[in-house]
Image (cartoon, rainbow, N blue to C red; front, side, top):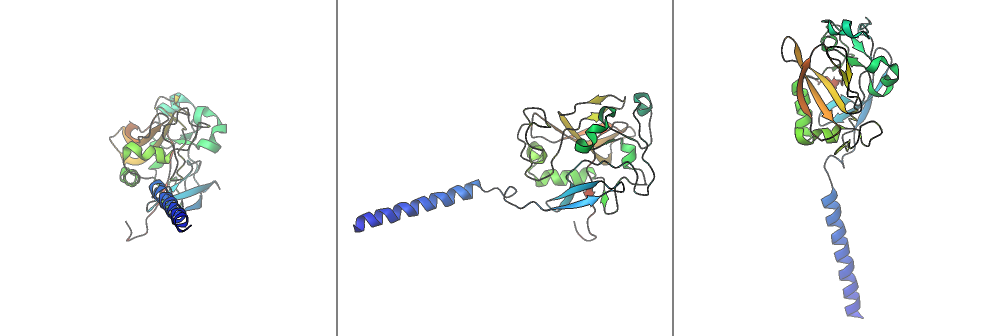
Length: 240
């Protein structure tokens, strides 16, 4: 009887040890951390969820605003010829179709983002390349970061949406973009986000994610292109 009890006790102990080992092995420092969220409202009354990733706060939705922070309208441009000649701020909607706006937001040329009137409300701004890189580094580098930022599944992303976990809550969506010649491209396949960093007189820096991988790419595109915008929150003076 004693031997049977010892055997039963040992079996229970071993099972508990294996369970604890399994839980420990499955634990992921980002997955297991509670995602901290909040809300931000733009001048048009659009309400956006925000998410804390590392020590940065990001929009978890693409920007939709049609006015600068001072109330002045951001010019809307649907005509491809006019779009291709712009050197001032403008926005558009993918394929000139407003039904895309609720999910994918609006597309802005780079000039709108650096206009002194500001597309961002007080306390927020367009991220520069260093701020994008800080996010990428926090997520483990460019080869894996996009997987942790992309919305999961293939309801919006084209198949296979490789490696998408959205474990950050960033919920990157494939809103495509508009080329400098006015053509619309790659909705459901690409998510392309502006930075405020200028590369040359003609080009500026963007971050790109695709349906077929987990990489986030740093690319240079014409300032006359139209891409999605995610804002990042200003840091408190004295904080990194």
